[in-house]
Length: 43
Image 1 (cartoon, rainbow, N blue to C red):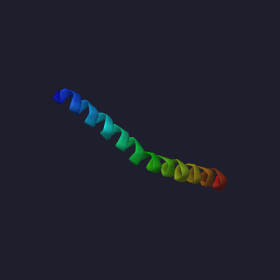
Image 2: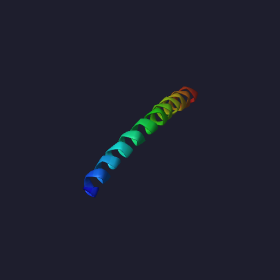
Image 3: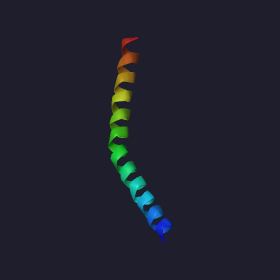
Protein backbone atom coordinates (compact mmCIF):
# COMPACT_ATOMS: atom_id res chain seq x y z
CA UNK A 1 0.00 0.00 0.00
CA UNK A 2 2.69 2.48 1.00
CA UNK A 3 4.74 1.52 -2.06
CA UNK A 4 1.83 2.44 -4.35
CA UNK A 5 1.46 5.82 -2.63
CA UNK A 6 5.20 6.42 -2.88
CA UNK A 7 5.17 5.57 -6.59
CA UNK A 8 2.30 7.98 -7.22
CA UNK A 9 4.09 10.73 -5.31
CA UNK A 10 7.27 10.07 -7.30
CA UNK A 11 5.38 10.34 -10.58
CA UNK A 12 3.71 13.57 -9.49
CA UNK A 13 7.04 14.97 -8.31
CA UNK A 14 8.68 14.04 -11.59
CA UNK A 15 5.92 15.69 -13.60
CA UNK A 16 6.13 18.84 -11.49
CA UNK A 17 9.93 18.90 -11.85
CA UNK A 18 9.73 18.61 -15.64
CA UNK A 19 7.11 21.36 -15.87
CA UNK A 20 9.18 23.64 -13.63
CA UNK A 21 12.46 23.02 -15.47
CA UNK A 22 11.04 23.29 -19.01
CA UNK A 23 10.83 27.13 -19.04
CA UNK A 24 14.36 27.40 -17.66
CA UNK A 25 15.63 24.99 -20.31
CA UNK A 26 13.92 27.06 -23.01
CA UNK A 27 15.48 30.26 -21.65
CA UNK A 28 18.89 28.58 -21.50
CA UNK A 29 18.51 27.51 -25.14
CA UNK A 30 17.46 31.02 -26.17
CA UNK A 31 20.32 32.73 -24.33
CA UNK A 32 22.76 30.01 -25.33
CA UNK A 33 21.80 30.33 -29.01
CA UNK A 34 21.94 34.13 -28.84
CA UNK A 35 25.36 34.13 -27.18
CA UNK A 36 26.58 31.54 -29.68
CA UNK A 37 25.37 33.59 -32.65
CA UNK A 38 26.95 36.78 -31.28
CA UNK A 39 30.23 34.97 -30.71
CA UNK A 40 30.27 33.68 -34.29
CA UNK A 41 29.45 37.15 -35.61
CA UNK A 42 32.26 38.78 -33.65
CA UNK A 43 34.75 36.21 -34.88
